[in-house]
Structures are given as C-alpha cells and as structure tokens.
Length: 415
Image (cartoon, rainbow, N blue to C red; front, side, top):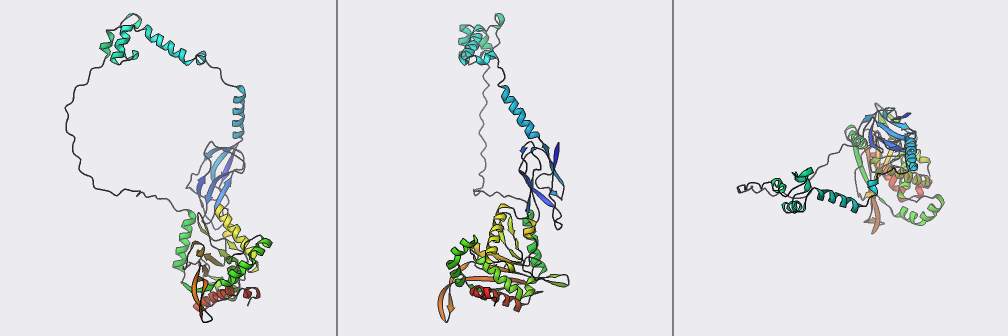
C-alpha cells in the first residue's frame, strides 16, 4: 500500500514554496518520522517527515520545483522495507549456493590442464617457432591432424611488417599568447527563496519609505560594570547569561511607549498604533538574515529576554524557526557589532517605521566632567520613516535609549 508525501499546509500569506532538498532517493528505505524532503518558503524551511515506514517509491516534484499547499511530492511504498529485510534474512538462512566441482580444484592443477591441452596440439618444433614469432596458439591455424600446429604453419600466420612511411616534418605551431594561470571559473546558482525575499523587502523599504538615519553614541561602562558584578549570580539563578541585548530591549520598550509613532506603521491613509511592543531581533543564519519576534517584550524580564534570544539563535542555526516565530513585529533591533561593524545605516523592516542598529564597543577618548578619559563607546543608529516619524521624535527617542543604557537605574524606575 502506498502513502502520499504532501506539501505542508502553508500560511495564508504564503502562496507557494520551493523544493530545496530531497534526503532520500527512489528505492531508499524510509523510517517512520524520518525527514524526507525540505521545502522553503519566503521566511522558513519546512521539513516533511515520513508518515509511514517503507521504501521511497516515487518522487513527483524534483529539487527546484515550485509547489503549493497539499501538493503531491512523492510516494512511499509502506512495508516494502520490511519485506525486503525478510527476503534478505531468508536468503542468508538458506546458506551459500552449491558450486561446480571445478571451483574446488587448485589453481595450479587448472593451469597444468590448460597447458597440457595446448601442448597436445603443437609439437616441440612448432612451439619453438611460436615463441620465436611471438605468437600464441590461438593466433595460428593448424594444418596437421585434428588441427595440430606444424612448424610450417607459423611463418604463414606471422603478420607482415608495415610498409615504411616517408617522414614529413611536423608543422610548426604558432606561439600561443601567454594567459595568466589560476582558477577563473564562475559558478551561477539561483537565489534561495529566503534570499530573494530579503532582497525584495530591502528594495521595497528603500523605494516606498522616506528613510532617514540619526546617530548617537553610548558610554557602555555602566552596564559593563553591572554585568561584571552580577553575571555569575544572574546565570546561577536564571540559567542564562547576562548580555547587553536584553538591556537594550528593555530600554527600547520604555522608549517605544513614550514615542508611540515609532511603534506604529502606515496602512493606506491610516496610521496604526500598537499598545504592545513586539520587538524583532535580527539573527544571522546560514540561509540569510531572519528576524524572530519577542512578543510583548515590555512585560518580559531580562532573563526571559536572554533565554528567548538564545533559543532563537539555536533554532535559526538548525533551520527550525517557524512562521509563528517570524510573523509580526512592531520594532526591530539589529546588532552588527557582533561582526565588528563600527557604524552602519540599518534598513527598515517594512511595514515598521523604525529600526535600531547596535555596533561594536570600542575604547575611545571622550570628555567626562571636563576631563579626557578612555571609555568603551558604542555608536547606535536609528533609521526611521520620515513620513510618520519627525526628526525631533527620532532624535529624542535615540537619546532616551542612550540615557537609559548609560544609567540602568532609570530602566528599573522607568524614569
């Protein structure tokens, strides 16, 4: 009995998907719940497991094919693997097949018998002539009784020497131009659906928004001191490491509630404001940049935020993020500093109206209380849609985050 392999049900916002990898070939044994094929949507890669054990009998959609929800991908012949295993077990129990007696003969005896047969059809003089002519018994037609080879038969079988060919001088080839050596190959591969969707959305953000960016810098010494003092106790109690991202997320949620236009988006002629903060955290994966979302981040503690971010990173690396992890989001934070970026202009994640960019922390000379001191400083950037966010609001929003991070007590007191 065959079992169908179907494309998973896709979200309403996703029209189709692409078959990216078949992990089995036709004829391969398949275990129950073993991943057979992966299909990629605009946001995630979905794994399709085997509903039954058996043998992959048919692949109807090859890698690269575009499919829709519920479309047939292939078929499994249920129980075929078990039948094959039983057949092999029965064959092994029956033991080896009988062999002919000649297989039991020693190789030396077989060779001697063959030599004796040849010798019987060629006398000593004929064998000497064969050796001198460099011919084998099979190359000479015997004229004696019962096909016996005579000495006189050997010269007639010897091939005539080829006629000499007049030597002609080889043409002189023109010198080829010197070409630099090295690998100059090109490799053309199609974009993945995720990469194509990223390109589409980034271009959309540039073309459909009035995007501007404002910058500031943050003295990271206060939160570095807090982390150094409490990181061990924090990890012991919560089972999560205390990082900078959770503090920036909490600072952002406070600032978003003070500046609601940054937590809003344009829908036609309307502005949609949110009374919650769903903060997307940009995470790099092998397939591209993905942005899983922290739901109602304003109600999460630092430990909850850190744990969620670690889980998102693990799922992204394993390709296990699902549509629920990536859908929605009212504001985004991206951290190019983990790759060494000192300053950049982050691009909006439509339809959101703003995105915060964090960067690498670097020691620089700064003025504190009219004195030049060395401090660990981080540049931060806020890109925003000028259609909905005024310059004053964007600058003040970023300044608020600066004040909250530089004085973390303000986060606790919400002042």
